[in-house]
Amino acid sequence: MRLAVSATRMQLLRLKKRLAVARRGHKLLKDKQEEMMRVILGLVAEIREQRQKVENRMAGILGRFAIARASYGSAALDEAVMLPSKRVSVEVTTRNIMNVKVPVFHKEISGRSRCYGFAATSGELDLALEDLDRLLDPLLILAEKEKSLELLAAEMERTRRRVNALEFVLIPNLVETVKFINLKLAEAERSDQTRLMRVKEIIRGEAR
Image 1: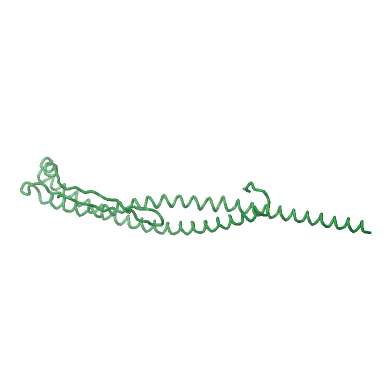
Image 2 (image 1 turned 90 degrees about the vertical axis):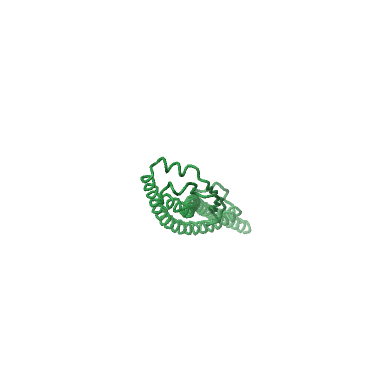
């Protein structure tokens, strides 16, 4: 769709500059989109691998808890883990990936998980809690990657919309408008030349 501007040389120069900027911006955004796609695909592969590790380890932990519950009963197990003194706090900082701020999690741990007498509990419970402690780091890594993927996907969508707006709306409109103004200016120039030639013929006729 042609832009509603006057067909003047000043507007033509302005639109040509705007068109050059739009094309340069489109190329930069297109490059960014391709690089983000590469980063996102790599992140998806990492998340799939990390999630598989976490799920496998979690299955082992739940299996140990099930054995402990079967050995000592639900009431004894619930009593043993009722009042843990362990506290985990997570500090969130950020880093940049493709100008997108993604989170980085830092944990702080105090206390301990096993606050019960060892004589009345199953060894499987001890092993399950130890495995659960070791699972914290992989869980935080998985959470970092999944949140990063979410933020990068949102930025990717915004970039895609900008690229499409430039490629299919703004640049074609500018090209059409520049072409229209060029035609109008060429038509005006031909009209001026025709008038000048007519004036010259009149002057020559009067001179005779």
